[in-house]
Image 1: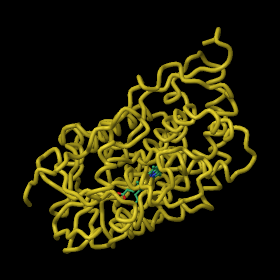
Image 2 (image 1 turned 30 degrees about the vertical axis):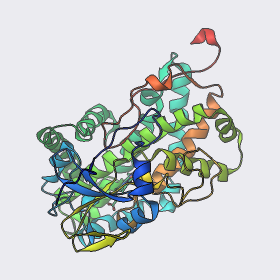
Image 3 (image 1 turned 60 degrees about the vertical axis):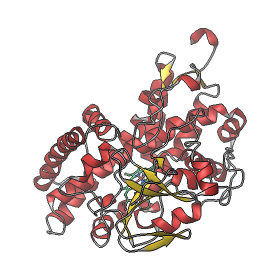
Length: 410
Ligand code: HEM
């Protein structure tokens, strides 16, 4: 591969607005929609920025998601640390292995089984909001609401003790920091795996009625799933289940507070369609699983008229696709009534997010409940001065100090 003067460094820096993807994506999408980028370790890959091309990449079985395939674009030191895992989770495996493992979970993530969790999710939301209302102001929305909600939900669903949340949240933070050294990520991953192995093995002898318990009883005992595979799956679900929704909830609330008229409409509506569309719009606009989906070509192929050779890395930028004016009218504007539902914030193709019905349920319950409980919710610091998570696999915000009620009370 030759390096040309036009090669851009990837990932790119974000600009002044914390809700927008890196500004350098726009000119690429307009003029060089499939272009070469250089990664931290000097290797190169193709960056794909148009919505139609991103979907084509993610739907193409000739592009592998397996990190061990030669040429796979490792976009950060942290990714390099995860590439050496012995039993990788199915998010980085190809079919048939990927679909064998994913299929074992599908019945737990259908719309119907997710809908049965609504009373549990609503109860958790109400309890957290009660505790916020009774506590001091200002309070950090992330630690009081956005993070405990998905953590409690995924723990109860999987059968992981929530009492251990400080441990697994700290370990997953180390794993998901892009700049973490590969050895540091591998060590954090081993710690989480050892913890989850203990839980999985305990469920072999002592059956529990939760997702991991059922997986152990039905699949591990039947010899269809090894203990190592069950541990990898548990690790994927535990991390994906709380990091993502927590950041979407916190960052989405900031966006809503920045658009008070639309926030008021979401707060006051009795029309479920408005809530559904608002959640999709916030997912599209923020695309928190940022820095593109990584794949590698296993055959020579063409994307957007550009020839990609077997063994070359491809980065499908969902954050750019979701701002493509050919797919979304006035794409940089928040419009909670937007009807198009073809955003790629949950990915596309066979690896499309398994937990999306759960994430949607949590967000559809949480945003309106928060706005209704505190109709005058406000951020007590300038949003431009908050600490945003550009350095993480999942974009978001570390802390959001909020208050409500009369000025004298904070
Ligand atoms: C996959 C985003 C919540 C579990 C993905 C992918 C994206 C994504 C973009 C595709 C990765 C790729 O193509 O390489 C999100 C967002 C969420 C969210 C934005 C919340 C706002 C969740 C939740 C869970 C979950 C709550 C569940 C427990 C998974 C799993 C995969 C996945 C297991 C791998 C699917 C596969 O490879 O077949 N997610 N996710 N996610 N997500 Fe989510």
